[in-house]
Amino acid sequence: MRKEDKKTSKPLWAGRLSEKPEEQAFAFQASINIDKRLVFDDIECSKAHAVMLGKQGIITKDSASKIKNELDKIAAEIKSGKLEIDTTQEDIHSFLESALTERLGDIGKMVHAGRSRNDQVAVAFRLFLKRTVPVLQSEISFAVNVLLDTAQLHVTSVMPGYTHLQRAQPVTLGYHLTAWACALQRDITRFSDALTRLDECPLGSGALAGTTLPLDRKTTAATLGFSRSTLNSMDAIADRDFAIEISSACAVTMVHLSRFCEDIILWASEEFKFIELSDSWSTGSSIMPQKKNPDFAELIRGKTGRTAGNLVTLLTLLKGLPYAYNKDLQEDKESLFDSIDTLSVCLKMFAGMIKDASFNLKRMKAACIGGFLEATDTAEYLVKKGLPFRAAHETAAKIVRDCIEKGFKHISSLNIAELKKHSKLFEEDIYKAITPLACIKARNLPGGPAPKEVRRQIRILRKKIL
Ligand code: ARG
Image (tube, rainbow, N blue to C red):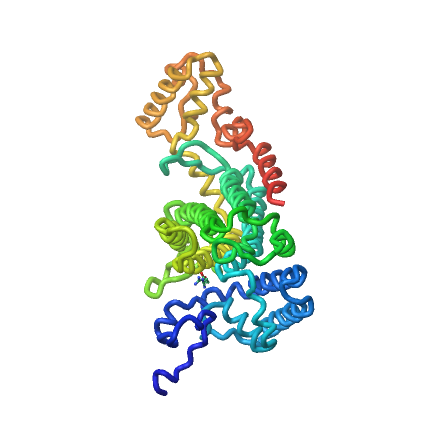
């Protein structure tokens, strides 16, 4: 085939140019392989626009209903596979307009009155997110529920809590998992916040400065399910804050998953041995026959880098752009689609992995002995008996050093006479006060790890994610 015979579709803007676009150059600036994902959103946008054009007398009502019906047919045919998206077209908007024109002739050519691909793409992108983000939110809710179901079973399963990755104070597995659930619940609200600001319809903004045609923007906004129209058309065309905000919410959620996975990876090590991932959520080694690896948790941690990168891509894309539209904006979708897809699959993997995991409660309990996790409680025991906290802290520190010298692993290994040498305030009741479970039960403030309090936290989180 000679070069000039190769197929390139006639672009919407061909009238201005005397030559057909160079094939590779055309392919370079085309976006259909990415924005074909917006096909159904763009169809909805065109239907609303055409019906409004009919109502406003810009085209006849008959033409408007023909366009609407044909768009419905096109949507059905794409869904059933009868109509394939022609990826030689420049973008999904061009494809749909040419499909319409092929079928309806001159009537198809009427649909673009009073609009530009600039407002079209802004509307379709927002519609796509209005549809997709709630799905992500329900996937987060699912993961939160899995965490809370597991947490509920373990409100008395003691384990060490860590700061600096050093054993700090006793907590429960239920408390730890509820902490993770809190972070994910916040993520749901972060998406909701972004959706509130995103809920404005740019349709009718034209290329940047509206149109001379008497469009009814209020009606198209309402038909498409937006709460309101955008205020300023130049801003509406240039704005991609909504993409940045959703991308940011994806990146933050991924950072959360990544941190949880870091805990899981540590817990799965022989050194911790707190968690036993099910075999179906583990992999082996091609050379080391004994290996059982937490690859799923590692990959979630690894993929978090992509979502952080995608956010930086968007920020960098926008930072130097003059108002209003620039073709650079076409690069906005690929990175956000990737963040959404990545988060979605990682949430499913995370929830599945947790659901099927089992916990080594004996190991967790045993790990509460040996790090003097009861030292703060010992100091607070003395505070309750009237000693100023700083003095109590020093006494408890000296007790810890005394235990280490004697080779003891827990403050309760010292007998009462030995304890009294450190402070006369010690009585027999100290031994009951510093068992891991007693330490946990006594931390019954709102926000604390006491079993009753964690049950309350679980109840509140469940309500919040409804
Ligand atoms: N595919 C383009 C995009 O995603 C559509 C807008 C093209 N507009 C233009 N003025 N060339 O941004």
